[in-house]
Length: 238
Image 1: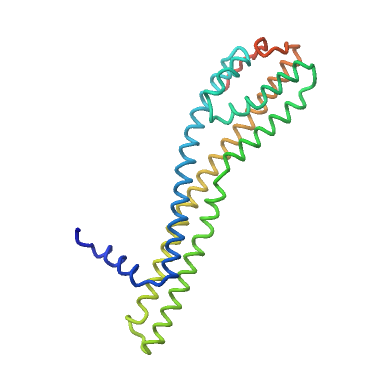
Image 2: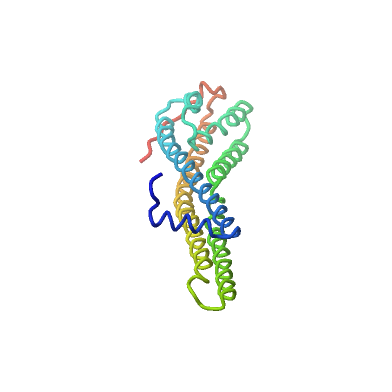
Protein backbone atom coordinates (compact mmCIF):
# COMPACT_ATOMS: atom_id res chain seq x y z
CA UNK A 1 0.00 0.00 0.00
CA UNK A 2 1.20 3.57 -0.64
CA UNK A 3 2.42 5.40 2.44
CA UNK A 4 -0.08 7.56 4.24
CA UNK A 5 0.21 11.30 3.85
CA UNK A 6 0.31 13.36 7.05
CA UNK A 7 -3.36 14.29 6.67
CA UNK A 8 -4.42 10.69 6.08
CA UNK A 9 -2.33 9.46 8.95
CA UNK A 10 -3.72 12.08 11.34
CA UNK A 11 -7.32 11.28 10.42
CA UNK A 12 -6.72 7.53 10.68
CA UNK A 13 -5.13 8.02 14.07
CA UNK A 14 -8.06 10.17 15.13
CA UNK A 15 -10.56 7.47 14.17
CA UNK A 16 -8.60 4.83 16.04
CA UNK A 17 -8.37 6.94 19.19
CA UNK A 18 -11.81 8.60 19.19
CA UNK A 19 -14.56 7.32 21.42
CA UNK A 20 -17.82 5.66 20.39
CA UNK A 21 -19.81 8.89 20.71
CA UNK A 22 -17.57 10.78 18.28
CA UNK A 23 -17.64 7.88 15.83
CA UNK A 24 -21.43 7.69 16.07
CA UNK A 25 -21.71 11.43 15.38
CA UNK A 26 -19.45 11.12 12.33
CA UNK A 27 -21.42 8.15 10.97
CA UNK A 28 -24.73 9.99 11.39
CA UNK A 29 -23.39 13.08 9.66
CA UNK A 30 -21.92 10.98 6.86
CA UNK A 31 -25.29 9.29 6.28
CA UNK A 32 -27.09 12.65 6.30
CA UNK A 33 -24.56 14.06 3.85
CA UNK A 34 -25.00 11.13 1.47
CA UNK A 35 -28.80 11.51 1.65
CA UNK A 36 -28.63 15.24 0.90
CA UNK A 37 -26.31 14.78 -2.08
CA UNK A 38 -28.53 11.99 -3.44
CA UNK A 39 -31.62 14.21 -3.18
CA UNK A 40 -29.85 17.14 -4.84
CA UNK A 41 -28.57 14.96 -7.68
CA UNK A 42 -31.95 13.33 -8.31
CA UNK A 43 -33.86 16.62 -8.12
CA UNK A 44 -31.40 18.44 -10.35
CA UNK A 45 -31.74 15.80 -13.07
CA UNK A 46 -35.53 15.76 -12.73
CA UNK A 47 -35.85 19.56 -12.90
CA UNK A 48 -33.54 19.74 -15.91
CA UNK A 49 -35.68 17.24 -17.77
CA UNK A 50 -38.87 19.00 -16.64
CA UNK A 51 -37.63 22.30 -18.00
CA UNK A 52 -36.76 20.79 -21.38
CA UNK A 53 -40.04 18.93 -21.67
CA UNK A 54 -42.06 21.95 -20.51
CA UNK A 55 -40.63 24.07 -23.30
CA UNK A 56 -41.42 21.38 -25.85
CA UNK A 57 -44.95 20.93 -24.53
CA UNK A 58 -45.78 24.64 -24.54
CA UNK A 59 -44.47 24.95 -28.07
CA UNK A 60 -46.65 22.04 -29.20
CA UNK A 61 -49.63 23.35 -27.22
CA UNK A 62 -49.57 26.74 -28.91
CA UNK A 63 -49.09 25.25 -32.38
CA UNK A 64 -51.76 22.55 -32.12
CA UNK A 65 -55.01 22.90 -34.03
CA UNK A 66 -57.09 20.70 -31.72
CA UNK A 67 -57.05 19.73 -28.08
CA UNK A 68 -57.27 16.10 -29.12
CA UNK A 69 -53.89 16.50 -30.83
CA UNK A 70 -52.29 17.57 -27.57
CA UNK A 71 -54.05 14.76 -25.72
CA UNK A 72 -52.64 12.24 -28.16
CA UNK A 73 -49.01 13.25 -27.66
CA UNK A 74 -49.12 14.51 -24.04
CA UNK A 75 -47.51 11.31 -22.75
CA UNK A 76 -44.34 12.07 -24.69
CA UNK A 77 -43.82 15.33 -22.78
CA UNK A 78 -43.72 13.88 -19.29
CA UNK A 79 -42.54 14.77 -16.68
CA UNK A 80 -43.47 18.32 -17.73
CA UNK A 81 -45.88 19.72 -15.08
CA UNK A 82 -47.97 21.42 -17.79
CA UNK A 83 -48.51 18.10 -19.58
CA UNK A 84 -49.66 16.51 -16.31
CA UNK A 85 -52.06 19.40 -15.68
CA UNK A 86 -53.46 19.17 -19.20
CA UNK A 87 -54.00 15.42 -18.96
CA UNK A 88 -55.70 15.71 -15.57
CA UNK A 89 -58.17 18.33 -16.82
CA UNK A 90 -58.76 17.16 -20.40
CA UNK A 91 -60.96 14.15 -19.63
CA UNK A 92 -63.07 16.15 -17.18
CA UNK A 93 -63.44 18.92 -19.77
CA UNK A 94 -64.66 16.43 -22.39
CA UNK A 95 -67.22 14.99 -19.94
CA UNK A 96 -68.51 18.43 -19.02
CA UNK A 97 -68.78 19.46 -22.67
CA UNK A 98 -70.63 16.24 -23.54
CA UNK A 99 -73.18 16.88 -20.78
CA UNK A 100 -73.58 20.55 -21.59
CA UNK A 101 -72.71 21.49 -18.02
CA UNK A 102 -70.67 24.38 -16.61
CA UNK A 103 -66.91 24.28 -16.34
CA UNK A 104 -66.82 24.73 -12.58
CA UNK A 105 -65.75 21.12 -12.11
CA UNK A 106 -63.00 21.58 -14.69
CA UNK A 107 -61.70 24.64 -12.85
CA UNK A 108 -61.50 22.61 -9.64
CA UNK A 109 -59.64 19.83 -11.46
CA UNK A 110 -57.13 22.32 -12.87
CA UNK A 111 -56.50 23.88 -9.46
CA UNK A 112 -56.12 20.44 -7.89
CA UNK A 113 -53.72 19.36 -10.64
CA UNK A 114 -51.58 22.49 -10.16
CA UNK A 115 -51.46 21.90 -6.41
CA UNK A 116 -50.55 18.25 -6.94
CA UNK A 117 -47.69 19.18 -9.26
CA UNK A 118 -46.30 21.76 -6.83
CA UNK A 119 -46.48 19.21 -4.01
CA UNK A 120 -44.62 16.71 -6.16
CA UNK A 121 -41.94 19.27 -6.99
CA UNK A 122 -41.45 20.06 -3.30
CA UNK A 123 -41.12 16.41 -2.28
CA UNK A 124 -37.73 15.69 -0.76
CA UNK A 125 -36.86 19.31 -0.09
CA UNK A 126 -38.04 18.98 3.51
CA UNK A 127 -35.22 16.46 4.00
CA UNK A 128 -32.69 18.99 2.76
CA UNK A 129 -34.08 21.62 5.12
CA UNK A 130 -33.98 19.16 8.02
CA UNK A 131 -30.41 18.10 7.27
CA UNK A 132 -29.28 21.71 6.88
CA UNK A 133 -30.85 22.64 10.21
CA UNK A 134 -29.98 19.54 12.24
CA UNK A 135 -26.42 18.77 11.11
CA UNK A 136 -24.75 21.74 12.88
CA UNK A 137 -26.45 20.75 16.14
CA UNK A 138 -25.39 17.13 15.76
CA UNK A 139 -21.86 18.37 15.15
CA UNK A 140 -22.24 20.68 18.15
CA UNK A 141 -23.14 17.70 20.30
CA UNK A 142 -19.88 16.07 19.22
CA UNK A 143 -18.09 19.33 20.00
CA UNK A 144 -19.48 19.46 23.51
CA UNK A 145 -18.68 15.80 24.07
CA UNK A 146 -15.11 16.33 22.89
CA UNK A 147 -14.65 19.28 25.26
CA UNK A 148 -16.00 17.17 28.09
CA UNK A 149 -13.43 14.49 27.24
CA UNK A 150 -10.72 17.14 27.12
CA UNK A 151 -11.56 18.32 30.65
CA UNK A 152 -11.80 14.73 31.82
CA UNK A 153 -8.32 14.04 30.45
CA UNK A 154 -7.06 17.22 32.05
CA UNK A 155 -8.41 16.10 35.41
CA UNK A 156 -6.98 12.62 35.04
CA UNK A 157 -3.49 13.91 34.18
CA UNK A 158 -3.57 16.57 36.88
CA UNK A 159 -1.68 18.98 34.66
CA UNK A 160 -2.51 21.16 31.66
CA UNK A 161 -0.57 19.25 29.02
CA UNK A 162 -1.22 18.80 25.32
CA UNK A 163 -1.31 15.04 25.79
CA UNK A 164 -4.17 15.39 28.24
CA UNK A 165 -6.45 17.59 26.16
CA UNK A 166 -5.49 16.72 22.56
CA UNK A 167 -7.88 13.74 22.06
CA UNK A 168 -10.91 15.63 23.32
CA UNK A 169 -10.10 18.79 21.36
CA UNK A 170 -9.57 16.71 18.23
CA UNK A 171 -13.01 15.13 18.63
CA UNK A 172 -14.56 18.56 19.15
CA UNK A 173 -12.97 20.11 16.07
CA UNK A 174 -13.55 17.18 13.71
CA UNK A 175 -17.21 16.75 14.64
CA UNK A 176 -17.75 20.50 14.25
CA UNK A 177 -16.22 20.43 10.79
CA UNK A 178 -18.26 17.33 9.87
CA UNK A 179 -21.48 19.08 10.93
CA UNK A 180 -20.70 22.05 8.71
CA UNK A 181 -19.67 19.76 5.85
CA UNK A 182 -23.09 18.11 5.96
CA UNK A 183 -25.12 21.28 6.57
CA UNK A 184 -23.67 23.82 4.11
CA UNK A 185 -24.22 21.84 0.85
CA UNK A 186 -27.72 20.85 2.01
CA UNK A 187 -28.58 24.49 2.71
CA UNK A 188 -27.24 25.68 -0.65
CA UNK A 189 -29.04 22.86 -2.45
CA UNK A 190 -32.30 23.60 -0.64
CA UNK A 191 -32.22 27.27 -1.58
CA UNK A 192 -31.33 26.56 -5.21
CA UNK A 193 -33.94 23.85 -5.65
CA UNK A 194 -36.61 25.87 -3.84
CA UNK A 195 -36.04 28.69 -6.31
CA UNK A 196 -36.57 26.30 -9.22
CA UNK A 197 -39.72 24.94 -7.56
CA UNK A 198 -41.10 28.46 -7.33
CA UNK A 199 -40.37 28.98 -11.01
CA UNK A 200 -42.18 25.77 -11.94
CA UNK A 201 -45.07 26.65 -9.62
CA UNK A 202 -45.46 30.07 -11.23
CA UNK A 203 -45.36 28.52 -14.70
CA UNK A 204 -47.92 25.89 -13.70
CA UNK A 205 -50.29 28.54 -12.30
CA UNK A 206 -49.95 30.58 -15.48
CA UNK A 207 -50.60 27.57 -17.68
CA UNK A 208 -53.57 26.54 -15.56
CA UNK A 209 -55.16 29.95 -16.05
CA UNK A 210 -54.43 29.87 -19.78
CA UNK A 211 -55.90 26.39 -20.12
CA UNK A 212 -59.00 27.41 -18.17
CA UNK A 213 -59.50 30.45 -20.40
CA UNK A 214 -59.17 28.33 -23.53
CA UNK A 215 -61.75 25.87 -22.28
CA UNK A 216 -64.15 28.65 -21.33
CA UNK A 217 -63.77 30.21 -24.77
CA UNK A 218 -64.52 26.90 -26.45
CA UNK A 219 -67.55 26.33 -24.24
CA UNK A 220 -68.86 29.85 -24.94
CA UNK A 221 -68.40 29.38 -28.68
CA UNK A 222 -70.59 26.28 -28.66
CA UNK A 223 -67.84 23.82 -29.50
CA UNK A 224 -68.93 20.21 -29.92
CA UNK A 225 -68.28 17.72 -27.18
CA UNK A 226 -66.36 15.17 -29.21
CA UNK A 227 -62.68 15.51 -28.31
CA UNK A 228 -61.56 14.89 -31.88
CA UNK A 229 -63.66 17.81 -33.10
CA UNK A 230 -62.85 20.35 -30.39
CA UNK A 231 -60.83 23.17 -31.89
CA UNK A 232 -57.94 24.65 -29.95
CA UNK A 233 -57.34 28.25 -31.03
CA UNK A 234 -53.59 28.52 -31.04
CA UNK A 235 -52.04 31.48 -29.33
CA UNK A 236 -48.45 32.60 -29.45
CA UNK A 237 -46.46 33.34 -26.33
CA UNK A 238 -43.68 35.86 -26.03
